[in-house]
Image 1 (cartoon, rainbow, N blue to C red):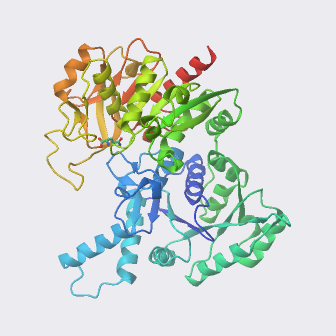
Image 2: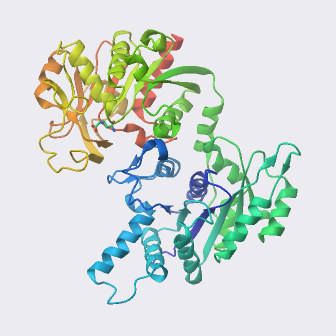
Image 3: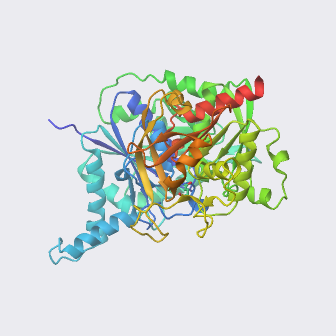
Length: 533
Ligand code: GLN
């Protein structure tokens, strides 16, 4: 008999940014700990088909999946918490669902019928939810946006319709603010939000309250009374590190409540490894400073995955990391002195990026790290610029650069490959998603990964120009990872340096709390050595 799939919807009220994604995956984590399989779905009610074209300044980083899907950065938290590899199917946007229905209409699939939001869009949403849930115990559906937004109405209507034929569990996340003057937890915003949900035809089974301090009993009672849920189903989601939420919810037996609702079996709930990871973040006995160059220095969200990869690594070493952002345009025009900027740092990361702004300053930072034994990790653009730096300053190719920086350069160390003929709006197709690489035996890369065959995720257009590879190698640059056909340069490193490694890929996208990425572990270890030896 086919497995019965249960559906859990997570909606949010009052305002955005309350941590609906973290709540969704924390619940998923607890259900997994009970030995249940889950399929998560993130619904983004915007009209974009995917996040590929979205500005990181407005939306945070674009997360890339193995299948090449460019998705909302929340999917990064999904993968990190649930330790799953997701696909583009785990992200649904208004644009995607409308396109699907409109394409069908053009093909004549609706046989002359009037195509409408209800039932055609809402049914397509339900079909998608059912499809990704096939063979799983639970589908967890996070409805993005705030209840009451016009955009999310078709998705909430689809949820309501689904609850007519299936047993659906609704969790509503609300803000419970504390007024500083009186110090009282206020429930009125929650009441209003639950009322809006009621107008759409949805009654929550559980209300999770985002609050500063743990929810007090009086507040719980009030919410229970006014919002029509049992007191024990009013849950406290108070301020803490994001990785602590599964532990906070575990104490409140949230998975048990959901399992009871569906009349399912309890299978224990061990979270020991997760607990030690969280303890490693809190019980720190060391501190290092890592410099990070970047164009989007104003917005931490642009580098979420790198920040998280550093968190995963630092927990292992019970070490705090201070990130010092370096706006490299200031290095270029000498409003910041390079030596002063990098004086007390224990490591340097040059992350990915697009365009030429600030690249000369980044190249100068890499040179400084190479010459002064500062542990260095280059990611994507950082890898390309490390090649340029080496070509210029070691191979004496003074005009070497990337054609992204100067399309007319005589020495295009980094360029667009002839095979990338299919042109998109930016001039070439991107290399997206998971790509294999073979690591050189005896290299630092092999030592870190502990194997020679690996796979990492990519999102870039430019590549190392093969015509310069032998010149760079002869001068001492080690391409320690290449594509299986040896045509694409994937990793570089240097001998006679404590830690100098870069990759064309985005390894930060695959780091997980319980399996930190080896390149980040290596960087943190090298930085600790530099600081404390
Ligand atoms: N801009 C570079 C390229 O397109 C690097 C991209 C990146 O760092 N993600 O190849």
